[in-house]
Length: 456
Image 1 (cartoon, one colour):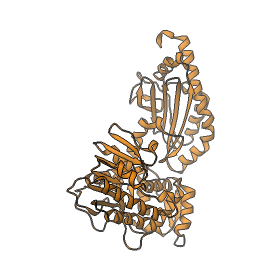
Image 2: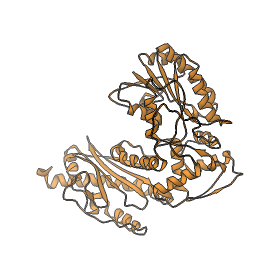
Image 3: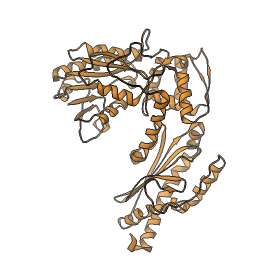
């Protein structure tokens, strides 16, 4: 059996999802741990050695994907203590291999990078063999470093940056990192430190320009100011991005160090993904996942996507009519619940070059064109529409009837400064409009139930 400590984190969730065998997901908060048919969730604090040893019983390979950076303060000491506890607990439980993900870098390291490498050394001091992978920026939606890159590049057509934008970095695609992490469980991969990265060594400035190109944004204008210290640039990043302040400060301190592969590991046989392809794949994968996951999103901003959802009650007698109404979407603004509000939205779009038109398909099914939308997901009680025709970014609109309620959710992956400004401007309006739209959907369903009872 395999265990993943830190299973609620970005990398931990990816590893759990990628494993095709029973996995023990470990974390302090069980409600935050991933679900799955073969996933056994166990709430445990890695600092509690006895409880951790019990949780690791029967485990052959354990992934250690824990760090205390988000807690701020003396995270290095907490990381040391947690690593010692994990090494001891793994030995007690009879674990045969520990796989740890650390960070690249050499020479004078920031506290964050020094701590990541120290954790690897502490784990290796125990009796259980440790495979330590060292990587730099992970290119994937949800990676903190990638999200900082996304927000800075999306929101700032021009920016004043410190010298760290000239530091060299060797990013790695999320898929390549996962392939290496899974491969590390094989006993043919020797214990020790393995440096991994993509094929491209770039500066942070070049990485931002690569993102802008792939995203279809104009080239960013970047002016370097040598006197802008990491501390000052951390305040600047906190204003521009929603990344946690404790995390962003630690990461920015690390940006002054080149993080490149100096001793490539031959153990993985990896054909690494080019950065342009990695960024495009990240954006495409996120786009495709939103349609299936949109009803699970919480209101607010997550990984570049703004979400607003509302729920209104539906009388049980009207639920069949509400489901029928999903098959009658498109062709008229009245279907959206508040026609004049959508007319104003179309008028606004014309000022930015949008050419939206109404159309109803012969049959509502996945892939059908409905007005300016494409049906991404469709079933008897739900529909999810997506458009890439908006000037402000890609948008999703979903409806689902379940039990005695109608759920309505809208999501926008904002594109550039204009997309961010659009969402900020319309958000207060959407708080009112979305609920009115949902209520009008329910009202129309009631009328449909009254008018054509035999068809529902």
